[in-house]
Length: 259
Image (cartoon, rainbow, N blue to C red; front, side):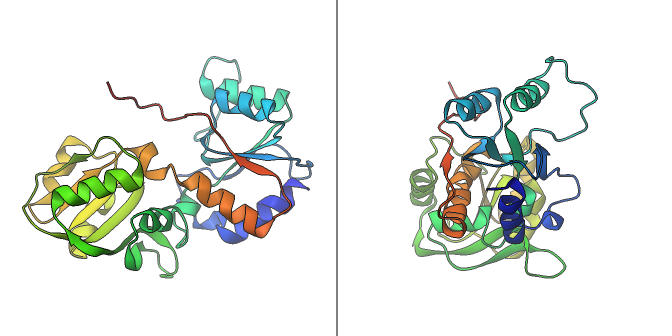
């Protein structure tokens, strides 16, 4: 199957123009006319992932986070980005990134989180101008939970061991806002929409003050919030191109560890 046929299908699902302006999505390494035998789906395109692609006979890596984010002025093997790009080219492996265009997809990253939490009555948290795409989702739990009960539920459903959070308020939790990845920019909107808890990641020290005793902020980790995106992409491709061989990467790419 031609690479361009695969990417055309992905881009109808998550158009490149729906990505944020700072992002770098689409085909990063390769040629649209290359023949693709098998794809490997990952959150990050690391050196270990490229090795896995080689071992699994995959000549396409579909990554959520783009390996090339800013311009590369040289390829000298000095940085992991340069080494990944060089190894991919040497081994005829194409790299394609679908990132904030999938974040903005109403059936994308945050839809998957909402699905994991069984949220109902869901809607976009931050809508774009056309109101059909946007970042984050907000919805209701099936049952009201105490803050501790919700944290236990969140840890179970999102497969996390640690949650950083703002001070507890002693209130019941029902309405949940979610935004995978770095989501401090949407705290005010979550409050405005009267969410009881906002689940996201990469909150800094001063971000927690923004809770203003109106909401619980829950930081579950960047990778953890987006980990199920691999399954989301696989399910989409299996549905749209059932005869196309693609697998989920088994390589752990989360660079953050806890002692």
